[in-house]
Length: 115
Length: 117
Image 1 (cartoon, rainbow over the protein chains, first blue to last red):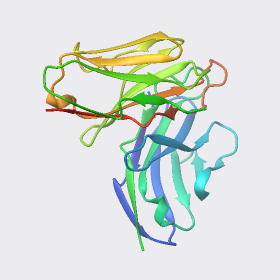
Image 2: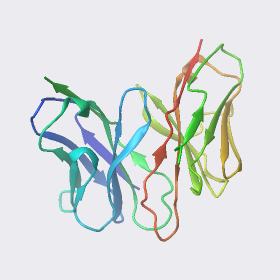
Image 3: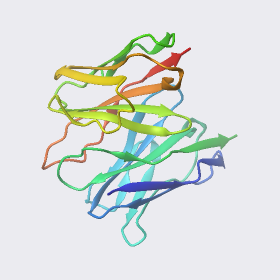
Image 4: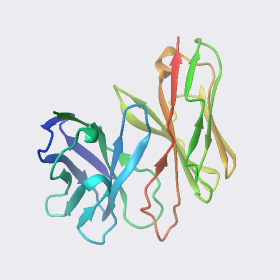
């Protein structure tokens, strides 16, 4: 069975600083991995996804994530935080190939950006 | 495309009343998902449909909850009778999912914020 663990329910950075949101996954088969962002009072939006192609995945708004099989990690990064990045971020996993079925979400990490 | 459309955006109801939440998925998507989000429990999958057929409803909390998808463009989630602990944001999401090309990711609606008093 698949699962994801997001380390840190709340991360605070200064504007212009590096953003690093951590996600570790557990999967008995090669996974598909996703990052979603949720702005206040909105639904979740897909930031980026890993589907077994390049291990470094670039997404919207300058975010990227690197799939590291040896570390079972899929951390999300952005070189320079912007105030508009303040939101909650969710890592998710599903199994590679075949029907997506149940996309398993982490508990979420709330990102705050200080001026 | 207008995206996944949910209605109503907000619903306040009294305990014991029936509540119906509605969802219109993106045209052409063949999978539809209902999630519930609360501070305590985070995002929980309630049920998902593939080609209008319920595939997994193990997340539906009780018999008070029911979901239908009569056609590819409409789904409902019904709670009867409603209780204060059902207060949450309910999200609908849809995706295009095949046995070969899974991994497209979901498109979420804006959610329905349900308050049961």
